[in-house]
Length: 566
Image 1: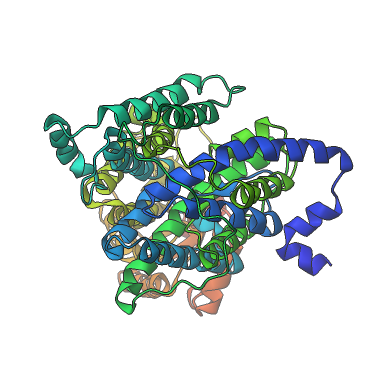
Image 2: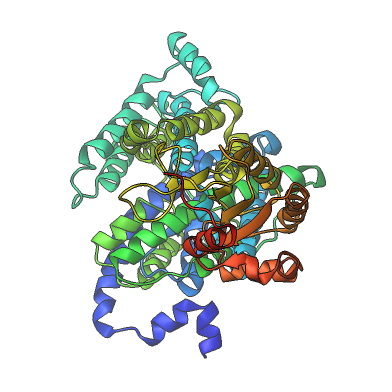
């Protein structure tokens, strides 16, 4: 049983389920349903597929995540942050065919699911931590702007071919100036958006539900879908999603795979952050690798059941929490309620206006923007702020998928930069301060004739090995006295690779030919173990590795019979 509960945390929760939780989970599930239906449909339309598939992508992932997901209350489903990524692939490849659009979106979900499962199985969940806050803010702000712009034509009641890039805002503005706006449609959408934003501050009030129901009733009662020209959702096909393998053309595979990987990156970055946040709130622990497996299984199931890529929801999860959710049974109740709607009352939403759905997506996109923390970053770390702006511009100008690719490249460069060009220092003794300190910060520091104390503040690896070699020779050349020995303060060096090891051999040989001894101090045991594997420990001599910098200095002073400079 323990083997199963490792991969199926839902079984462990079920085995420990308390009867007192049941009323809370059921009520929270019913409350959650009031959001699941409108946002599921809205995000489906924003993703370029018919609205019904948003409900399919709601039902199945909730059930699967309840079994595979480790988080107690995290809610998964269609998400506004994924909509532009899906649309970027679906719109140009589908050629206006809704069934083909569904197949493409479903295959993206399959790809995303397999990628997330692979990450979880290989225990690579830590990769989500490689995206710094500024970079994450940058691409999410770009995605938010893209989502907002993509919904403006629907809000104004007209259509523009390919209006899904931020630069199309010029064409949208021109269409408005040319009088293409349907003012009845705009009034319905703007009223819905205004109501959602106005009631958002009142957490106890279901503002989104009130706004969407109000718009639907107004259109139905006033007959605006007939006489007013307001585009509506129409009747939903009755029944539940079926198990279907999505088939796409061979020529579309590469773009679908790239899109699926981009979706996986956005989804697991957001899910890991949200999962950790709610784990802290509920005083529970969430395994990031199992979180990836749960997210991947939910996406895979969605793709095989006519759905499209999904992620955790930062808007529906708080609703579940506020409604008293205790476990994933809340999501199961929500999924069953949505399924019951499709079976028992598929015509209930036939008068739901598309401009109201656009308003739902726009309201969500507004919530994705992050400006407050960026102002703080601008104040305390200017270069990271501009890094965020670069990622934002990349998504906004290049498009969502290339922009996310740019964000990943920037993240890798940022990650490598500190190790690529690390800080280094020559050390000396400062009057009144114990230890050895950087002579650039303490110009009056005392030195020992013939000795250089050199510190390298990074792992030694292929990207900085040559730089280490150069900096050591520069430190020797800049010494005020002829150098007889250099001691590398290796405490900050956490690793050595083969390239760096070979460089050390070359450096030691060059120094020995110049009559200079190479010594190491405070090197960590795991790094020493690597040098032993590389057959360098014996080559350099075990006696030349000192436990502390003080011991190395004392040995030099004793052997060469010199003293500190006055």
